[in-house]
Length: 268
Image (cartoon, rainbow, N blue to C red; front, side, top):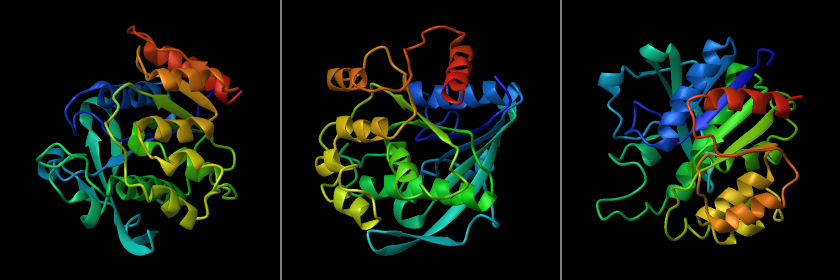
């Protein structure tokens, strides 16, 4: 593959959060692509449980200072950065006191999803794109991992569709099997419509559950990765109706090479 600019957007990345499938792939894949000479940028939320001192996070002043409007409210955007020395990789963090100060990731002490997880996702996705714009860096590939990044393909195709920074970007979305019960705030669709997103694009988000969030992302992507061996049956059926390249689950040590080949197919 010719050297590319690759943007990774993930809800969890090791070692900043406990290791799982998403956190592991979202750390190892960028490391591999970076080692191949590609220009890589990585973003994740700065959840309050991430130890800033241990991981040596510091604010990127030149990228911070913007305000994003979420549900008609101004929210300050703070960008931080830290390194994974063993991977020779920098990770940018999207931060905000309202959404990410709490010492938890997605659920409260009773293991219930936070009521504002929808707005946290909106802020995260838009924060990434605004930070990339401020960097003046045009990615060839944008690869999203996890439901919290599922709205980013929607924003790229609708809200930022005329922005020259993203005009040639190809979106890859990884579908995982780690679903959540219930749904996000039922006002999510209205909040997206407020941002000028087309009603048809977010029609499925009248009920913003795990399956429908993934459907919205899949419909706005240029390539799909089945990141788990087992994903929801409804998503399996939905994928069969898509007319974009799909990479099947890779359960071997050479998975990064398969992703590299897939990227070449997407940007060909």
